[in-house]
Structures are given as structure tokens and as C-alpha cells.
Image 1 (cartoon, rainbow, N blue to C red):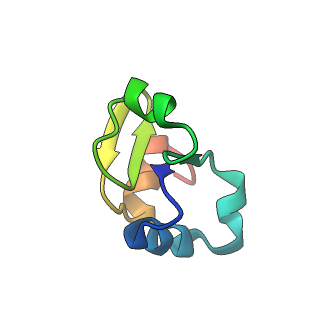
Image 2 (image 1 turned 120 degrees about the horizontal axis):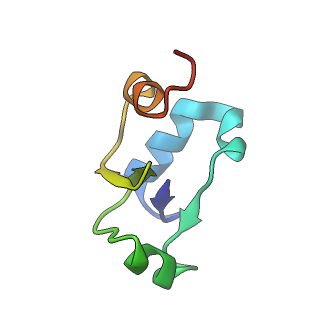
Length: 71
């Protein structure tokens, strides 16, 4: 997930995962602007899955379907 610490939508997205969020790859775009530019991140949060961007807060169901994790 690409985002920032100050983004309220990112904080809401993180909350869906609870303590398990630490197992996800999180790129803070304030700290790594080049990574976010390289991956065409235009807003926060943005999920990058299998080379595709999914902007905005995503449901656990949608992320599970996109990643085939838990299915």
C-alpha cells in the first residue's frame, strides 16, 4: 500500500488490518517520493497488486480477491 502517515483514508485502511498491517508492504510517499512517482501513485491510499494500481480505500474482500489470498 502506498500512502502517508497523515492521510486519514490511509489510517482507516490500516485499521481494517489491525495488528496484521505490519505484514503488508507499506510505502510512505513522504519518505520515498521516487518510489511513488515510479509507480504512478496519484492519491492515497493506493494499492499496487500484480502491476496494477487500485486507488482509494479497498475492502478486505476486494484485496483478498485481487491477491487470491484467503480464497
